[in-house]
View: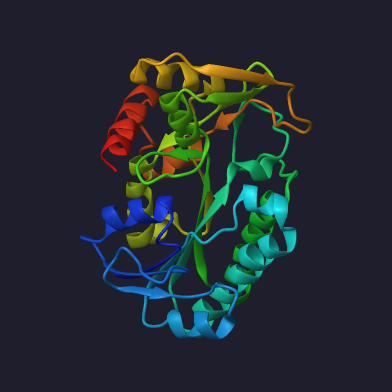
Length: 293
């Protein structure tokens, strides 16, 4: 299969390159001048002509390109341009150049305020951030292009992905600060529970979605179904590093989402598996990678 990976130079992209390059004919693209894979091309997802020229003679497109939650707080317009207009450019190119399937990464944060601890794909979606709104909108456009143009899709709603190659995010930030003896800011009491997913565990799901049409035209929660609190993450990192954390407690932020994890019933019923690495092993492997890079 000829696969085009958009957003290849990010944290998840680099892991997918490692996991897919020996199984498929892989092409990669991102905004950087130089990429980490031999078949790399620089592009701007908001430029339709560039996208049309890029997406040719491939079977499947994986779109990881995203303007992040943090970036969206500063620039809502750029967030929408990258996440919505960018995706529409990709969809148009896929339609015109007869791509068989697009695999898209959404986010669990589109839920907004969860009504259940285990959140299924059918849970009511009321996004609370500009970033989450773009992900919800993207899911609707993917369904529309399937209905109007028969462009197949697979959506993976990411929960809290972590692991090798990650430079930003909760776990690498806490790790660096604990290691350096710097203060960590915790909002509230740090009892917020999240579903943390070790990034190598997601690769088999992408590989299966690439090669088998039985997974098409569905949205899947890509989580473990297990919850870990923010304070537990800090404690586990501290134990591995043998360093006592310096914690600065701040009032809970307005609009803080509740505790929730992935309902993995659909994922398991379709794929026969779910992400499996427990948080202790995942953190140990992540810290080992960080110490060498």
